[in-house]
Amino acid sequence: MPKKKASSKSSVRKLPKTECCVSKSKCGRCPLRMLKEGTLPEGYTVKKRKLVTVDGKKVTKKKLAKAA
Image (cartoon, rainbow, N blue to C red):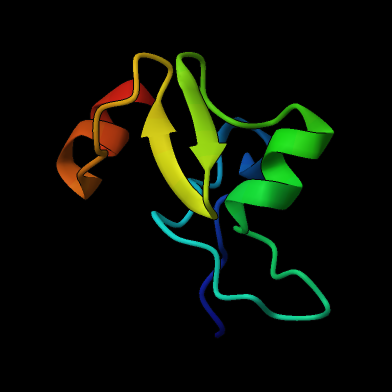
């Protein structure tokens, strides 16, 4: 029997990457795309294709995981 996956995918939020990969098609976790769509976590923005906090500090993956 195949295993069933969790059906509550809507509650799981995708975290943005810390830096844009400059892909033409814009991947699903691109911070630029997420900023445009409004799905970026509260308190974050993008400057020079890098994810930063609103006050301009660098973002680590550990801090980002706590925010979302």
